[in-house]
Length: 558
Image (cartoon, rainbow, N blue to C red):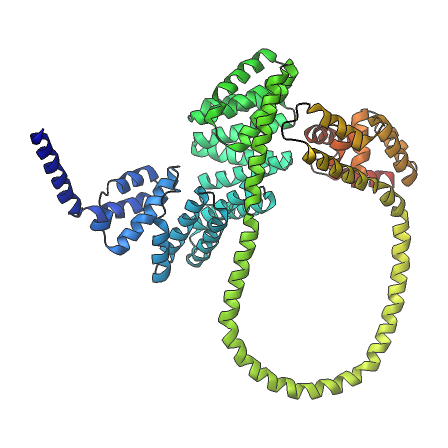
């Protein structure tokens, strides 16, 4: 026993002695890691991890570089960095030193990434914006693109899709000479268009990115893009194409955590095409593996699908359980989005930057003000004389303006009168909006564990449609359009006799300036179904994708 204790004590002392000795090759290892960081981040991480005693083996400046390089390498190897808080010490060091803009930009950017992994989006956005300022000073396009892309991701995670799209576009400009990163930017843009129900634009950007990924042989990116294309094709009901790309995505996937997404997409596809045996197979795989994918948006999508699946099989207890879990995940997502607005953070940062610029220029302005006061005093006398001279001329000009204004008002009233009836009659949409608000209030009053969820659906139909059927509501709307535009409905029927009833209704509602979501509410169809019918409608009207249906009808019926 005593002998074992002596050996342990000796080992401890040797370890203490070794730990105090600096590692002579540490500066060289750090330099090598920084040199290979962009091309071989895995090698850079191994070099960084081989530095055993950075505090004693590196100078203070090198140690700060080490802290930044460590977070950078871990981030590029897709490791969580939320515990790497020493990066903030490096950020303060380089900012105060103010001699190396690149190091400052990197320190600020990866400080932002640590905050992002911690779920603190407000300081993350602030760090990103500061990093962008320094990256712009040195015109480092790769870093500029990375910052813009990361800001886009913050916006996307918070549901601010138009702001995210703008940042992804900026990143694609910076990445023009970097095919791999350009492809990722195009993929992100396609993702935004997909979630915004703009399928044509989504297809365009996904296919552009896929072409680049195939050219450079990037299988991971090809797999992600194949999955995105599969979902997009499914949304427009091109099921054969959807299955083709889903199979390709599974073939290229090497990350088992992505399998639940593949199972969910295949289950949805086979369910939509009534291939129930295949659907059951992938539903079983989804249930077994979905816990391996913790992403809340995926969990919500999976729970929603499984709710409908179990309800369709008559398994109401299971359906209710999935519905409850779906509601819980949705609540968590909304709570996270409400915690803080990264868009407001960006605006706050921009305002603070404007203030700094203002105070810096204040001294120069004060000098100019003294000189301008002298000029103003002298110029004031000249201005009064000139103003008196011009006054009579202005009175005459004002009289002419009044005459022209009256003429313009008469013209506008004449044009406005033609549109008035249709505008007034279409204000019934406001009534629907008010009723939907009442519905939401009713839902909020319900206890969280209400067993009969179908009563909410019945209440929705009652509030929005009253005692009338969809056909009765449609006929009422059609009469309004006929009164506001006499002869238009009949001419549309006559000119395009091959339109189905559903397509005709979508055509009339589109001409009446209803959005896809509003049409979906009125006709009790999904937005995806309405979007598909509008695509078919454009084809029958002889229009290209994205053309304005209302303008086309006005032109042919004038």
